Amino acid sequence: MSKHNEHSIKEAIENLLKVYKLNDKLSEKKLIASWESLMGAMIAKHTQDIVIRNKQLIVTLDSSALRNELALAKTKIIKILNDHAGSQVITDVVLR
Image (cartoon, rainbow, N blue to C red):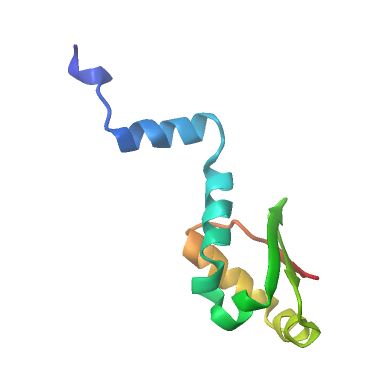
């Protein structure tokens, strides 16, 4: 076997993700999985559902007071999430 065809598993997976355009989906799933660690236990406790569609984070909350508080911090939330992902995964936040 020739050396030029050998790739590490990491390179092979990265190429696979790139070819099938799954990098963005993987970043989205990582953000959803790390919601509690990024936003805190109190916010996570009141979060009922999180979905990302078309770079828009849709968060369903069970507290209207928390929803209003987070609405004031949308820009900060977007920055925290995108900094964590290392790229622009989220452009807007919708709170329900």
